[in-house]
Image (cartoon, rainbow, N blue to C red):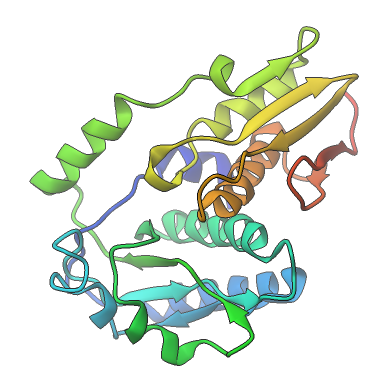
Length: 245
């Protein structure tokens, strides 16, 4: 999968067609979910053909036509669980995009009561990912939301603190970071480059901030080069560069 192409192509979609997701797309997504759950110790689940939590009434008109979604759940005992859900969840989003599907992170405009039946008592779950087929062009409401968000997108210089001129791989990572989705478009994850190391930190002023931290870390990792480095989980954790330029 070309992750960089998926990052460039990904936009939040809120209106879905009635066309069903293909079996091969479901198989690919389930395989990725199983791998991510194993790697992160999570319990993300895919729900097909049951979009009631995101009906127009339950989503305050923000969504229409939702049939499928992914529950982002994991053990409450894991202090980094929500960051992991952001990190691995965004990986599923990018895979769905590469498969030709529309996606959207959802943190508030849905009925949690209709989702909670799939959650274990010792699990945390605050958001979902909706996905499905979409029309090539945005609906008028999607277009309006998209234009509003683009006016507020921060640049690399707004999210990267440096003590010295950063190398190309840091700049490349940050170019992917600024394309990452963010709850309420806050884009609050900050990156610090010092002593040839990169760390990521967020103030944790919002209950969605751990997810944003995980999403931003994945985007940086992809932009800096797949397989050339990896993150520790935790607020303020460091990116370990495996391959030197």
